[in-house]
Length: 218
Ligand SMILES: N[C@@H](CCC(=O)N[C@@H](CS)C(=O)NCC(=O)O)C(=O)O
Image (cartoon, rainbow, N blue to C red; front, side, top):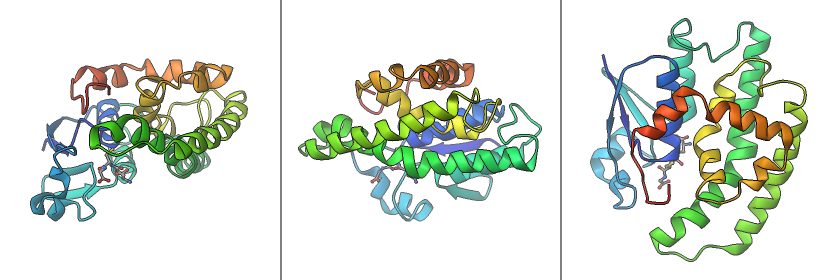
C-alpha cells in the first residue's frame, strides 16, 4: 500500500516526507494549496478537521499531526531503513524528550519567523516586527541550550541520529535559507556542525529535490 501524503510543499509535511525516505517507505503526494485556502475546503476538513497539513492516508488508515505520523512510521517499521528511535528504552526516552523540545521550545519561534517573514507578504498582512524581534531573541536562548547539549553528544538524543534531529529539518532549512537568519546556527559551533551533518543526509537532500516549492522563496 503506497502512503498518500497531503500538502508536500510545506514545512510540516516535509517532516513526514523525510521520515518516509529514511524508513524506505513508498509514498505519493497530493498537492494542497494553502495560499488558495484549499486546506479549509469541506473535503479536506473531512480528513483533518483543524484544516492543517499534513495528513497521511495509508489504506483506510488516516493520520494527522506531523510528529504523530513520524512516530507512527518509526515504530511500525522499526527494523526497516534507519532506526530513528534509539536502541534502549532510555534512548527512546531522550528521543521523546527532544521531540517535545522541538515541538514546544524550538518550533513556535521558528514558526513565527516563518509566518511573519516568509508568509506575511504573500498572504497580504503586515509582518509584526515585535513578534519577529521577540521570536529571534527567544530562539537564541533555546539555541544556547542546544549548543550546550550538542557539545556533549553528536545528536540531540545521544550519539545517534533520531526523529528528534529529523524533526528540525524543514523549519531550520527556512531559518538558514529564506528567513536569512543563518547566523543563529553558524555562531554556535556545535549547533553549526550538527546542522551540517543532518542537513547533508541523503534523505533531506532528496526531499529538497522533489521540487514542491510553496512559494518562490521557500
Ligand atoms: N501541529 C501540526 C501543525 C501543522 C502546520 O502548522 N501546518 C501548516 C503548514 S506547515 C498549516 O497547515 N498551516 C495552515 C493553517 O494553519 O491554516 C503538525 O505538525 O502537523
